[in-house]
Amino acid sequence: MGTIGFIGAGNMGEALIRGILKANLAAPHQIIIADVNQNRRAQIGERYGVAVSESNSQVVACSEVTILAVKPQIIHSVVKEIGEVAAAGGNKLLISIAAGVRLSSLRVCLSEGVRIIRVMPNTPALVLEGMSAICSDGADQEGLATAEKIFSAVGKVVIVEESLIDAVTGLSGSGPAYVALMIEALADGGVLMGLPRKISQELALQTVLGTARLLMEAHYHPAALKDMVSSPAGTTIQGIYALEKAGFRAGLMEAVRSAAVRSRELGQS
Image (tube, rainbow, N blue to C red):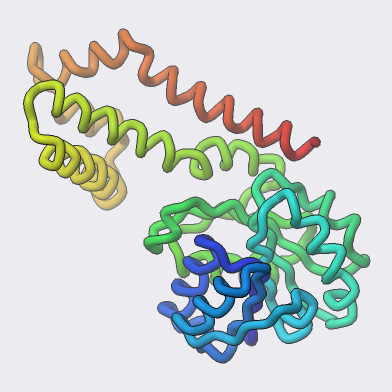
């Protein structure tokens, strides 16, 4: 794969570095990072033994693949800054993980022929259990394969059309917050019924983790697992009835829809 560069070394950038090294996709000397925060650059360099630079352009010049792990508010200025170097480098690949920023808006900052891929990861990548969606604006199968290999190091990957990235953002991008809210509510319910907070939270966390693993490994449909647990006139069906009355299912669907709509709005601004 050659040298992998990072412009931006925040939480997601660090997660990717850790995953890449663990998967042996690159050695520490094959990774170079730049970050506006000098202390952060030094910290990541020391922690992982990777090369550091003060120059975004130098990172691109030294790398076959450069991951743009910067905030959406500054990514256009970063792409303009590195565009000339990327064009001069031949077959370099840029990968943007900036939420809500369309490839077409980045493309106008680049010379024709510069390859760029867009990825929507999520925060469980921090523990190598992420879910990433990848898209391109052309037939760059090699670039897609490279991005898939990199992001598979921090979790699972799907390839989608860019028109679906807003839906991905609403579901898996924002989803960890929905799940965290649900876990908090489950734990609060346990406390309401007399459980100590620590025990209640452990019960809630392991229940969600175990259920997700069971669904994935046993290939159950969620409805089938729900029916397995629900006995006639039992406790579980009574709880499900309470959730249905509260609009639990519709609430989650509306959360995904609203977040996707907001992602689309941000992409058009």
